[in-house]
Length: 392
Ligand code: GLY
Image 1 (cartoon, rainbow, N blue to C red):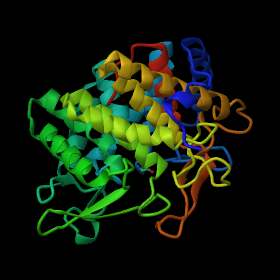
Image 2 (image 1 turned 30 degrees about the vertical axis):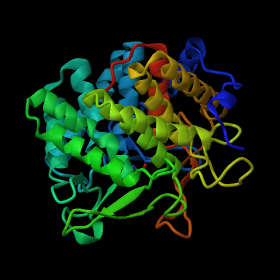
Image 3 (image 1 turned 60 degrees about the horizontal axis):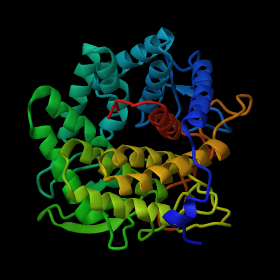
Protein backbone atom coordinates (compact mmCIF):
# COMPACT_ATOMS: atom_id res chain seq x y z
CA UNK A 1 0.00 0.00 0.00
CA UNK A 2 1.52 3.30 -1.03
CA UNK A 3 1.53 5.97 1.64
CA UNK A 4 0.51 9.54 0.90
CA UNK A 5 0.86 12.72 2.97
CA UNK A 6 -2.84 12.38 3.76
CA UNK A 7 -2.55 8.74 4.83
CA UNK A 8 0.34 9.29 7.20
CA UNK A 9 -1.49 12.16 8.92
CA UNK A 10 -3.84 9.57 10.38
CA UNK A 11 -0.99 8.36 12.60
CA UNK A 12 -0.12 10.03 15.93
CA UNK A 13 2.55 12.72 15.81
CA UNK A 14 5.34 13.49 18.25
CA UNK A 15 4.77 16.70 20.21
CA UNK A 16 7.31 18.64 22.25
CA UNK A 17 6.37 16.85 25.46
CA UNK A 18 6.77 13.36 24.09
CA UNK A 19 10.02 14.33 22.34
CA UNK A 20 11.33 15.76 25.61
CA UNK A 21 10.51 12.55 27.47
CA UNK A 22 12.21 10.46 24.80
CA UNK A 23 15.25 12.76 24.86
CA UNK A 24 15.49 12.47 28.66
CA UNK A 25 15.44 8.70 28.34
CA UNK A 26 18.13 8.79 25.65
CA UNK A 27 20.35 11.12 27.67
CA UNK A 28 20.04 8.72 30.63
CA UNK A 29 21.39 5.88 28.46
CA UNK A 30 24.21 8.08 27.14
CA UNK A 31 25.19 8.91 30.72
CA UNK A 32 25.36 5.20 31.58
CA UNK A 33 27.44 4.48 28.46
CA UNK A 34 29.97 7.21 29.14
CA UNK A 35 31.94 5.03 31.57
CA UNK A 36 32.89 2.66 28.73
CA UNK A 37 32.84 5.05 25.78
CA UNK A 38 35.00 8.05 26.63
CA UNK A 39 38.57 6.91 26.01
CA UNK A 40 37.18 4.22 23.73
CA UNK A 41 34.56 4.50 21.00
CA UNK A 42 31.53 2.29 20.32
CA UNK A 43 31.64 -0.12 17.38
CA UNK A 44 29.67 1.02 14.30
CA UNK A 45 26.77 -1.25 15.22
CA UNK A 46 25.75 -3.23 18.26
CA UNK A 47 26.15 -7.01 18.58
CA UNK A 48 23.16 -8.66 20.23
CA UNK A 49 22.08 -5.18 21.32
CA UNK A 50 25.42 -4.04 22.78
CA UNK A 51 28.12 -1.86 21.30
CA UNK A 52 31.66 -3.03 21.80
CA UNK A 53 34.47 -0.66 22.84
CA UNK A 54 37.22 0.05 20.31
CA UNK A 55 39.54 2.64 18.84
CA UNK A 56 38.75 5.76 16.84
CA UNK A 57 38.55 4.07 13.43
CA UNK A 58 35.96 3.62 10.64
CA UNK A 59 33.53 6.30 9.46
CA UNK A 60 31.20 6.09 12.43
CA UNK A 61 32.93 7.29 15.62
CA UNK A 62 31.95 10.95 15.18
CA UNK A 63 28.30 10.05 15.72
CA UNK A 64 28.98 9.02 19.30
CA UNK A 65 30.87 12.26 20.02
CA UNK A 66 27.93 14.10 18.45
CA UNK A 67 25.56 12.25 20.77
CA UNK A 68 27.65 13.36 23.75
CA UNK A 69 27.57 16.99 22.56
CA UNK A 70 23.78 16.81 22.21
CA UNK A 71 23.57 15.43 25.76
CA UNK A 72 25.80 18.29 26.93
CA UNK A 73 23.59 20.86 25.20
CA UNK A 74 20.44 19.37 26.70
CA UNK A 75 21.72 19.09 30.26
CA UNK A 76 24.58 21.60 30.57
CA UNK A 77 26.36 18.84 32.51
CA UNK A 78 30.14 19.36 32.36
CA UNK A 79 30.73 15.58 32.54
CA UNK A 80 29.47 15.34 28.96
CA UNK A 81 31.65 18.22 27.85
CA UNK A 82 34.76 16.67 29.41
CA UNK A 83 34.09 13.34 27.70
CA UNK A 84 33.47 14.98 24.31
CA UNK A 85 36.69 16.99 24.66
CA UNK A 86 38.71 13.82 25.28
CA UNK A 87 37.26 12.52 22.02
CA UNK A 88 38.04 15.75 20.18
CA UNK A 89 41.72 15.24 21.13
CA UNK A 90 41.46 11.76 19.65
CA UNK A 91 40.07 13.20 16.40
CA UNK A 92 42.92 15.72 16.16
CA UNK A 93 45.39 12.85 16.60
CA UNK A 94 43.50 10.80 14.01
CA UNK A 95 43.63 13.42 11.27
CA UNK A 96 47.19 14.51 12.06
CA UNK A 97 48.36 10.92 11.73
CA UNK A 98 45.93 10.06 8.90
CA UNK A 99 44.51 7.05 10.73
CA UNK A 100 41.83 5.28 8.64
CA UNK A 101 40.95 8.37 6.64
CA UNK A 102 41.54 7.21 3.06
CA UNK A 103 37.87 7.87 2.21
CA UNK A 104 35.40 10.75 1.95
CA UNK A 105 33.71 10.51 5.35
CA UNK A 106 35.42 13.53 6.87
CA UNK A 107 32.08 15.25 7.46
CA UNK A 108 30.51 12.36 9.32
CA UNK A 109 33.63 12.11 11.47
CA UNK A 110 34.60 15.73 12.05
CA UNK A 111 31.39 17.82 11.77
CA UNK A 112 29.72 16.13 14.72
CA UNK A 113 32.83 15.93 16.89
CA UNK A 114 35.08 18.89 16.07
CA UNK A 115 32.93 21.45 14.24
CA UNK A 116 30.41 20.88 17.05
CA UNK A 117 33.11 21.48 19.68
CA UNK A 118 34.25 24.66 17.95
CA UNK A 119 30.71 25.99 17.58
CA UNK A 120 29.74 25.17 21.17
CA UNK A 121 32.93 26.02 23.06
CA UNK A 122 35.32 27.80 20.68
CA UNK A 123 37.81 24.91 21.04
CA UNK A 124 40.77 25.85 18.80
CA UNK A 125 42.16 22.31 18.62
CA UNK A 126 38.78 21.18 17.31
CA UNK A 127 38.85 23.91 14.66
CA UNK A 128 42.35 22.83 13.62
CA UNK A 129 41.24 19.19 13.35
CA UNK A 130 38.12 20.06 11.32
CA UNK A 131 40.09 22.25 8.92
CA UNK A 132 42.68 19.51 8.42
CA UNK A 133 39.78 17.14 7.70
CA UNK A 134 38.31 19.59 5.17
CA UNK A 135 41.71 19.87 3.44
CA UNK A 136 41.98 16.10 3.38
CA UNK A 137 38.49 15.76 1.88
CA UNK A 138 39.26 18.43 -0.71
CA UNK A 139 42.09 16.21 -1.99
CA UNK A 140 39.43 13.75 -3.11
CA UNK A 141 37.81 16.29 -5.45
CA UNK A 142 38.12 15.18 -9.06
CA UNK A 143 38.08 17.99 -11.62
CA UNK A 144 37.26 15.45 -14.35
CA UNK A 145 33.62 14.89 -13.46
CA UNK A 146 33.48 17.51 -10.68
CA UNK A 147 32.80 15.25 -7.73
CA UNK A 148 34.36 13.93 -4.53
CA UNK A 149 35.58 10.38 -4.93
CA UNK A 150 34.10 8.25 -2.17
CA UNK A 151 36.40 5.33 -1.65
CA UNK A 152 39.82 3.95 -2.54
CA UNK A 153 42.93 5.77 -3.61
CA UNK A 154 42.10 9.03 -5.36
CA UNK A 155 42.16 8.79 -9.13
CA UNK A 156 42.00 4.98 -9.10
CA UNK A 157 40.00 3.82 -12.15
CA UNK A 158 38.09 1.08 -10.31
CA UNK A 159 36.87 3.60 -7.71
CA UNK A 160 36.09 6.62 -9.89
CA UNK A 161 32.66 7.16 -8.39
CA UNK A 162 30.55 9.16 -5.99
CA UNK A 163 28.01 7.90 -3.49
CA UNK A 164 24.85 9.57 -2.24
CA UNK A 165 26.04 9.43 1.39
CA UNK A 166 28.66 12.06 0.50
CA UNK A 167 26.03 14.80 0.61
CA UNK A 168 26.45 14.73 4.40
CA UNK A 169 30.19 15.27 3.99
CA UNK A 170 29.67 18.57 2.16
CA UNK A 171 28.82 20.77 5.17
CA UNK A 172 32.38 20.56 6.52
CA UNK A 173 33.51 22.08 3.21
CA UNK A 174 30.94 24.90 3.37
CA UNK A 175 31.98 25.49 6.98
CA UNK A 176 35.68 25.54 6.04
CA UNK A 177 35.00 28.25 3.46
CA UNK A 178 33.13 30.28 6.05
CA UNK A 179 35.89 30.14 8.67
CA UNK A 180 38.87 30.53 6.32
CA UNK A 181 37.30 32.94 3.83
CA UNK A 182 38.60 30.67 1.06
CA UNK A 183 35.75 29.82 -1.30
CA UNK A 184 37.48 26.80 -2.85
CA UNK A 185 35.95 24.30 -0.38
CA UNK A 186 32.38 25.53 -0.96
CA UNK A 187 32.93 25.51 -4.72
CA UNK A 188 33.90 21.82 -4.61
CA UNK A 189 30.87 21.04 -2.46
CA UNK A 190 28.52 22.91 -4.78
CA UNK A 191 29.96 21.25 -7.86
CA UNK A 192 29.69 17.86 -6.18
CA UNK A 193 26.00 18.19 -5.33
CA UNK A 194 25.24 19.50 -8.82
CA UNK A 195 26.93 16.45 -10.36
CA UNK A 196 25.30 14.11 -7.85
CA UNK A 197 21.81 15.39 -8.55
CA UNK A 198 22.38 15.06 -12.28
CA UNK A 199 23.49 11.41 -12.00
CA UNK A 200 22.16 9.87 -8.83
CA UNK A 201 18.55 11.07 -8.87
CA UNK A 202 16.44 8.94 -11.20
CA UNK A 203 13.38 10.07 -13.14
CA UNK A 204 11.06 8.28 -10.73
CA UNK A 205 12.69 10.22 -7.85
CA UNK A 206 14.46 7.22 -6.36
CA UNK A 207 18.24 7.35 -6.07
CA UNK A 208 21.25 5.27 -6.99
CA UNK A 209 23.58 4.49 -4.15
CA UNK A 210 26.77 4.97 -6.17
CA UNK A 211 27.56 6.36 -9.61
CA UNK A 212 30.69 5.87 -11.70
CA UNK A 213 32.11 8.66 -13.82
CA UNK A 214 34.15 8.25 -16.99
CA UNK A 215 37.71 8.96 -15.94
CA UNK A 216 38.80 10.23 -19.36
CA UNK A 217 35.86 12.48 -20.22
CA UNK A 218 34.38 13.23 -16.79
CA UNK A 219 30.95 12.26 -18.16
CA UNK A 220 28.48 10.22 -16.05
CA UNK A 221 28.99 6.50 -16.79
CA UNK A 222 26.62 4.21 -14.83
CA UNK A 223 24.99 3.68 -11.45
CA UNK A 224 25.38 0.63 -9.24
CA UNK A 225 24.42 -0.18 -5.71
CA UNK A 226 26.76 -1.06 -2.90
CA UNK A 227 24.37 -1.47 0.02
CA UNK A 228 20.98 -1.52 -1.71
CA UNK A 229 19.07 -4.60 -2.81
CA UNK A 230 19.51 -4.04 -6.57
CA UNK A 231 21.32 -1.61 -8.83
CA UNK A 232 17.91 -0.24 -9.79
CA UNK A 233 16.33 -0.18 -6.33
CA UNK A 234 16.17 2.57 -3.72
CA UNK A 235 18.31 1.75 -0.68
CA UNK A 236 16.31 3.31 2.16
CA UNK A 237 19.27 4.92 3.91
CA UNK A 238 20.60 6.26 0.62
CA UNK A 239 17.28 7.95 -0.07
CA UNK A 240 17.43 9.43 3.45
CA UNK A 241 20.99 10.69 2.90
CA UNK A 242 19.54 12.41 -0.18
CA UNK A 243 16.79 14.13 1.83
CA UNK A 244 19.07 15.48 4.53
CA UNK A 245 21.95 16.16 2.16
CA UNK A 246 19.85 18.38 -0.08
CA UNK A 247 18.46 20.25 2.95
CA UNK A 248 21.99 20.89 4.26
CA UNK A 249 23.26 22.20 0.95
CA UNK A 250 20.17 24.40 0.71
CA UNK A 251 21.02 25.80 4.14
CA UNK A 252 24.44 26.92 2.92
CA UNK A 253 23.73 27.82 -0.71
CA UNK A 254 20.07 28.93 -0.78
CA UNK A 255 19.77 27.62 -4.33
CA UNK A 256 16.01 27.61 -4.96
CA UNK A 257 16.24 24.70 -7.40
CA UNK A 258 17.05 22.43 -4.42
CA UNK A 259 13.51 22.85 -3.10
CA UNK A 260 12.10 20.79 -5.94
CA UNK A 261 14.90 18.22 -5.57
CA UNK A 262 14.11 17.96 -1.87
CA UNK A 263 10.43 17.40 -2.59
CA UNK A 264 11.12 14.73 -5.18
CA UNK A 265 13.47 12.70 -2.98
CA UNK A 266 11.38 13.12 0.18
CA UNK A 267 8.04 12.37 -1.45
CA UNK A 268 9.45 9.11 -2.79
CA UNK A 269 10.60 8.18 0.72
CA UNK A 270 7.22 8.97 2.28
CA UNK A 271 5.26 7.21 -0.45
CA UNK A 272 7.22 3.98 0.05
CA UNK A 273 6.98 3.76 3.84
CA UNK A 274 5.30 0.59 5.11
CA UNK A 275 2.21 0.62 7.29
CA UNK A 276 4.12 1.03 10.56
CA UNK A 277 6.30 3.81 9.06
CA UNK A 278 9.64 2.14 9.87
CA UNK A 279 11.31 1.60 6.48
CA UNK A 280 12.67 -1.74 5.42
CA UNK A 281 16.36 -1.52 4.53
CA UNK A 282 15.47 -1.16 0.85
CA UNK A 283 12.25 0.17 -0.69
CA UNK A 284 11.99 -3.03 -2.72
CA UNK A 285 10.31 -4.36 0.46
CA UNK A 286 6.98 -3.28 1.84
CA UNK A 287 4.43 -4.12 4.53
CA UNK A 288 4.45 -7.81 5.38
CA UNK A 289 8.03 -8.48 4.27
CA UNK A 290 10.25 -10.48 6.62
CA UNK A 291 13.29 -8.41 5.60
CA UNK A 292 14.85 -6.26 8.35
CA UNK A 293 14.12 -2.59 8.93
CA UNK A 294 16.50 0.32 8.93
CA UNK A 295 15.29 2.68 11.64
CA UNK A 296 18.32 4.91 11.01
CA UNK A 297 16.95 5.81 7.57
CA UNK A 298 13.79 7.16 9.21
CA UNK A 299 15.79 9.16 11.79
CA UNK A 300 17.97 10.72 9.06
CA UNK A 301 14.90 11.60 6.97
CA UNK A 302 13.19 13.24 9.96
CA UNK A 303 16.24 15.46 10.57
CA UNK A 304 16.33 16.43 6.90
CA UNK A 305 12.67 17.39 6.88
CA UNK A 306 12.95 19.34 10.13
CA UNK A 307 15.89 21.28 8.66
CA UNK A 308 14.21 21.98 5.31
CA UNK A 309 10.91 23.21 6.76
CA UNK A 310 12.75 26.30 7.96
CA UNK A 311 13.06 27.44 4.34
CA UNK A 312 9.72 26.40 2.83
CA UNK A 313 6.53 28.42 2.44
CA UNK A 314 4.04 27.70 5.22
CA UNK A 315 1.89 25.27 3.27
CA UNK A 316 4.79 23.09 2.26
CA UNK A 317 6.52 23.49 5.63
CA UNK A 318 3.41 22.16 7.38
CA UNK A 319 3.26 19.14 5.11
CA UNK A 320 6.85 18.06 5.81
CA UNK A 321 6.78 19.09 9.49
CA UNK A 322 3.68 16.96 10.05
CA UNK A 323 5.26 14.03 8.22
CA UNK A 324 8.49 14.34 10.23
CA UNK A 325 6.61 14.36 13.53
CA UNK A 326 4.57 11.31 12.61
CA UNK A 327 7.65 9.32 11.62
CA UNK A 328 9.46 10.46 14.77
CA UNK A 329 6.55 9.23 16.89
CA UNK A 330 6.76 5.84 15.20
CA UNK A 331 10.47 5.73 16.03
CA UNK A 332 9.83 6.66 19.65
CA UNK A 333 7.09 4.07 20.01
CA UNK A 334 8.62 1.20 18.06
CA UNK A 335 12.39 1.60 18.07
CA UNK A 336 13.53 3.60 21.13
CA UNK A 337 15.47 1.47 23.58
CA UNK A 338 13.44 1.06 26.78
CA UNK A 339 15.60 -1.53 28.50
CA UNK A 340 19.32 -1.10 29.15
CA UNK A 341 19.54 -4.73 30.25
CA UNK A 342 18.91 -5.64 26.60
CA UNK A 343 20.85 -2.92 24.77
CA UNK A 344 23.21 -0.01 25.42
CA UNK A 345 22.09 1.80 22.23
CA UNK A 346 19.40 4.42 21.74
CA UNK A 347 17.58 3.29 18.60
CA UNK A 348 16.84 -0.37 17.90
CA UNK A 349 16.09 -2.04 14.55
CA UNK A 350 18.74 -0.55 12.30
CA UNK A 351 20.54 -2.37 9.50
CA UNK A 352 24.11 -1.49 8.58
CA UNK A 353 24.35 -3.81 5.57
CA UNK A 354 22.33 -6.66 4.16
CA UNK A 355 23.56 -9.23 1.70
CA UNK A 356 21.70 -9.49 -1.64
CA UNK A 357 22.35 -11.01 -5.07
CA UNK A 358 23.25 -7.68 -6.67
CA UNK A 359 25.14 -5.93 -3.89
CA UNK A 360 28.63 -6.57 -2.60
CA UNK A 361 27.79 -6.70 1.12
CA UNK A 362 27.72 -9.35 3.76
CA UNK A 363 25.17 -9.11 6.56
CA UNK A 364 26.33 -6.65 9.16
CA UNK A 365 24.50 -5.02 12.05
CA UNK A 366 21.18 -6.48 10.93
CA UNK A 367 18.34 -5.55 13.32
CA UNK A 368 20.84 -3.86 15.62
CA UNK A 369 21.56 -0.38 16.88
CA UNK A 370 24.06 1.68 14.93
CA UNK A 371 25.84 4.84 16.01
CA UNK A 372 24.37 7.02 13.26
CA UNK A 373 20.83 5.84 14.00
CA UNK A 374 21.40 6.82 17.64
CA UNK A 375 22.85 10.19 16.62
CA UNK A 376 20.09 11.18 14.16
CA UNK A 377 17.41 10.01 16.58
CA UNK A 378 18.86 12.28 19.25
CA UNK A 379 19.29 15.14 16.77
CA UNK A 380 15.64 14.79 15.72
CA UNK A 381 14.49 14.91 19.35
CA UNK A 382 16.75 17.90 20.01
CA UNK A 383 15.27 19.69 16.99
CA UNK A 384 11.79 19.07 18.40
CA UNK A 385 12.50 20.55 21.84
CA UNK A 386 14.74 23.50 20.99
CA UNK A 387 15.78 25.97 18.35
CA UNK A 388 18.90 23.94 17.71
CA UNK A 389 21.99 25.44 16.09
CA UNK A 390 23.22 22.53 14.03
CA UNK A 391 26.74 21.08 14.05
CA UNK A 392 26.68 20.42 10.29
N1 GLY B 1 27.70 5.95 4.79
C1 GLY B 1 27.67 4.55 4.88
C2 GLY B 1 26.36 4.00 5.26
O1 GLY B 1 25.37 4.72 5.30
O2 GLY B 1 26.31 2.81 5.55
